[in-house]
Amino acid sequence: MNPKEAAKLEVSRKVAQEIPGYTYGTPEATRSPVSLADLELLKKAVNFTEEDQRYLRVAGEVLADQTEEVIKKWRGVIASNPHLAQYSFGPDGKPDAHYSAESGLRFRQWILDTCFRRYDQDWLNYQQEIALRHTSVKKNQTDHVESSAYIPLRYVIAFTAVINDAVKPFLGAKGHSLEDVERMHRAWCKSVQLQIALWSEPYADSKFAPDEW
Image (tube, rainbow, N blue to C red; front, side):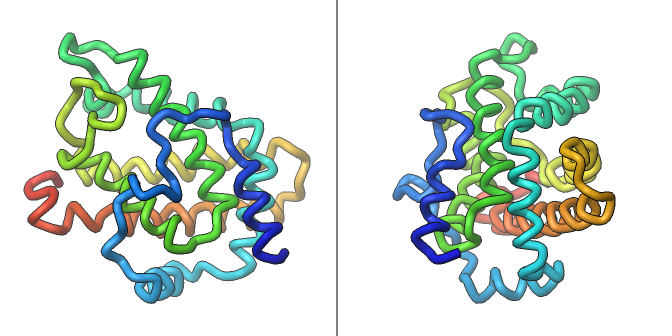
């Protein structure tokens, strides 16, 4: 696939025409302090290969019309755990429907970005933007809500297990072989692990998110 075809594919992969607060590829997204060279080293650390990139695209085709259901599954786990659910509550201690709807669209788009985007500078920048939106630096600003000041890093990391485990049945929903489902799932898990490593960056910087573990 040539660069023009790849770019065209990326543009077409959106869960909605308008996604509030989605600043991918714009100057509004914070530039990552992580270099592309460092990103390549992180890819090697998780053994993220060209085969994984191919199977992520296959996974994206499988998940494209299931993103809403995947998010419901993940959020069901959050809702059943008050110590996790509290981070999206409003001042009244109840879920904020506006916050849930707009962040949910971005969460669904994140699935497609994980599978279809090229892991280039724009992608790297948006990982930093996502990370900051979990910390006190930017949480609540995007959706103009009043909620908890930040999401602790420990829960961001721990919830990876749910994100990875719960997505697997959806990868098997379109009749692919067990071997292909395993390869899609392995590629997905590597990518999520890579992203979690990037999201930890501002938490590790005392200028941004001290004491937010």
